[in-house]
Length: 311
Length: 316
Image (cartoon, one colour):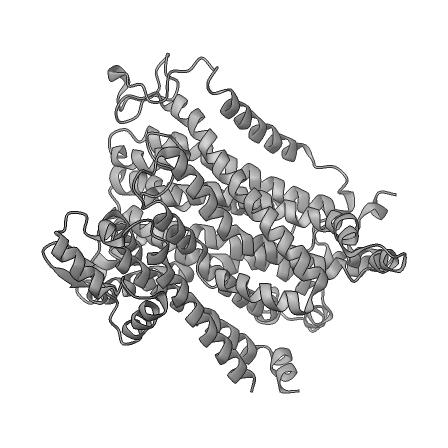
């Protein structure tokens, strides 16, 4: 009974042919795939835990992220300061927790931006094809013709160059820059999946019953395209959080004194020789988070049987 | 005919990308001369305004810029005292970046191909699961974090490799490698994981096919079957992914250069941003984007040449 829940096209056709099944789905997870699995729940818990810390940062019993304690400057973990202090004695744990705020805003914000705009464009171009597609897709391809990091770097550098750019405004610019970069990526995936799903019989049936295009797109096609979008988005959040670190290294990430994981690492690189704990602790948190997001992306893929071949 | 159409697309993309690059100066809020030479005198500012044609329309500015760009004039680094051309430095730093990417790609393939083939062959074993988990972890390590850690542990603590700087291969090949080894590893780690996972899933599918069974039935050795018969069709997939990956590779190389102070395009961009040299910045963005487009174009063509199915489909 569980196998029938798999919704992918090829599976429905080949479910009676075990040999083909074996070729197309080498990992048998797809067949079991009704549950996410323990590891995925651990990943969810980790992300939720960080999100909670980020939200509760103002009320948590941690020092102000910008307050300096001379005693812990460049020192490793102590009893009162579990992660030690940074170059000028600010509590590293507090900075990482506050940094989670900006890093998550950048990661989730940029992807949400790209998902809404890119998803909409992808859905429209994939559904209507023809002239709309011919107009919008080449535009997206131009954005794809520039290496993504270079594109983000260009946008953020230029938009953050004006006078009077404070930390909040810079955060918005970073979200916008990375969001624009993710539009064509998410758009392309949505378009490819929409193209495939729009061919299906139930879409034809809805058309035959006289449903309007908008309704078909939102009620019939979108729910089926969602898993692929979600899976790529989860990977995208990780990529965006790391990209902010890259931008910070170039001096155009989230602006100090507002902490982000990226700028803590970028700032901490100067202390690498004598107090490597700044970069190491922050990197570990960053690494675990990206791994959790990648893992969730994969889990969604397996759970819903999203196929690379559709792309 | 097919080539001609592809070439037309290439040309259009290049034009659009240069248009984007020259738009960067337009997007700059306020007076660009404020940003470029904040401490310049009014006269200097006026001269710069003339040179960049800021008083004219964007169309004029763009066509002038494109004309200069096409003839190798990439603009200047503007300072109050003197202007230095961007192109001089660019020709020095571009080879460094290209070498770094080339080394990383080679290293990645050297590790990923045998690992991918073996994990596919030994699917489900302890070796396969360990490699897969390792690959999964490798994908999640941000390259700058890995760079700093390698720099610290292998460079500073153990003192095995040089942690920052560069020597050109023509001057002293040995020193060149000493400088390049850590950046190369840093850049290659993520790529190894991507290629390995891809090759594994591709090979698992290939190994189920009839011609493999045929080869086994003929009594060929496993090694020969794996690397001669099964790997060949996967090489196309590898090529496609290598093509798709170039963007990530370029971005990674730029970041890794900043981490290891390698004087390539990344470090040049870093300095241009730090010193607000937007004119230099936009030329570099255009050069990188055009290189990216050309490489993708080459991969596309190569793909057509290598895969008989595509080759024949295009003919008809």
